Length: 139
Image 1 (cartoon, one colour):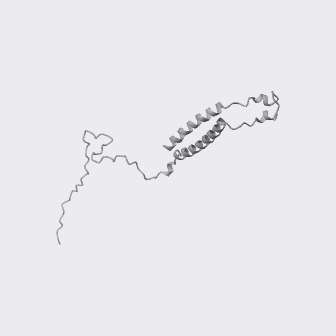
Image 2: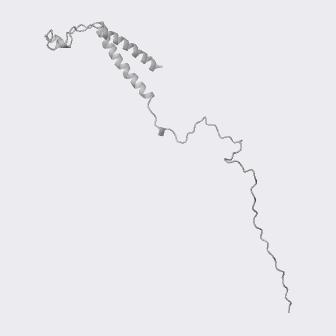
Image 3: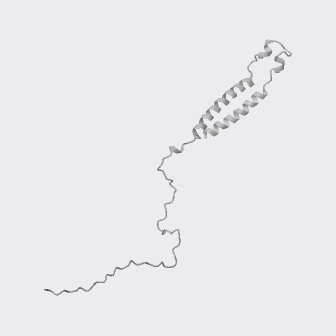
């Protein structure tokens, strides 16, 4: 809000500054006349000091306000758009809008189950043949 207000003041001040500079009368002699041209008086090189009229004072004040507002707006804009490092963020933070994984649906296998039953291999049964005990006569 304040930034927009100051920016609007800067644009208005810029328009006033342009109007004040463009409406001022020139000194009458150009650059070519100053160096060996029509007049050779010392006042022609530096220019005659004129009384400060309204347009001169307006251009000085508008220029100062323009520089001041530009500096303040520059300081305000650097604090809001400073880039932030990725490392400044916490490592353990998770987004709050992430939906939890569904727990009611069963897990779906990646490959479909085979339609035919696979042959089952039973473990070999160990059958021992028992020999009949031979009885020896007792002595």
